Length: 278
Image 1: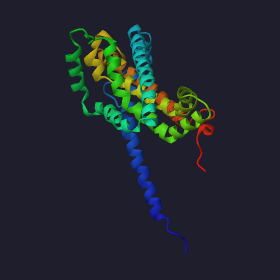
Image 2: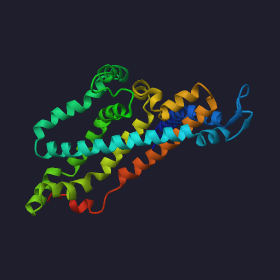
Image 3: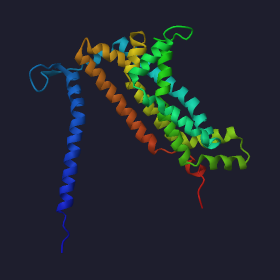
């Protein structure tokens, strides 16, 4: 007697239909934006009247756009480096030597999710708009805000990496072999948590690259980032703004590919550094 496969076949068709509808829903706006950025004119028809690359040429030859990209990259790189330099040692010390205090750090890094960006921006403007710490409108307040915003991503990734490699056992084994705590952290722990840390860094950078509310309210036009450049282009040329959006999506796609690659990458000696349970 042959097994019945009609139920499985219907289920696969249903799942494929749902997945197809979801993909169309997600990518149709992107496809429309791409067509609009390539359109010479698009008024009455379903498709553009002609295609051109002049809008991409205009933004890539625009000094303001290149400067905005440079500023955004600068802010993102500085923020990620500072956050890693401060957070990774703190998370390691609490996870290995003071696990009772780790709960307090976890609560503190999750607090930014409890406040809407608009409310946080208004509070920061009020606090830093005058007095000896008047830094509103400068890049430093933006870096400080982004530092707080990406802490949850860095914390969770580093903590999970430390738990996966059994950091406490690795440190104890390294110390029994004569290594100092600093040497154990630098030569044993850091190489093993590097893949997860790099993934968190790229995710954090992607979030910084696409954030608009804080950039608009805290620095505005005084420090024009990609987000502010896109906002200004929307008021002048919709097709040029669409070209900026497509360029942004392309960059995010590249970053996503790097995240997937780094998520599966293991540094040399990764397996040998782990403590295997007998």
